[in-house]
Length: 139
Image (cartoon, rainbow, N blue to C red; front, side, top):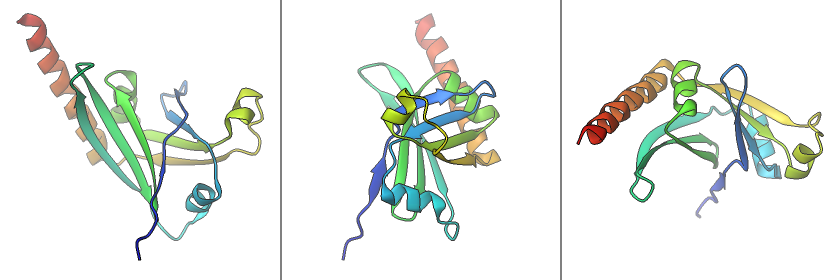
């Protein structure tokens, strides 16, 4: 029997004044259960991909828990800096309607912190991209 995988992508990603990433996800019963389950832990995967058409690297962050995952892609820039320095991602479950109308009191939120290894990985990827892009500009 194959277990169904639930994949979520935020409909809005923002950065707080404290340089924390805030990912706003449309809630459903599974993701609510996933976030409220304290018996299992979150696993965070970070990877870098390069978009050939855009000529731009993307930081791919996937948050796994139970049979669900929340996937985010960040183009090179402020989000890379925020994740390598502060390393905080908050997931907010909120409908688009409630967000548009400022109804945030019922939002379910969880905050995850990247470990030093992942923050170092992102910082290293950022330095590598800076070095590569400088070489490209010099050519």
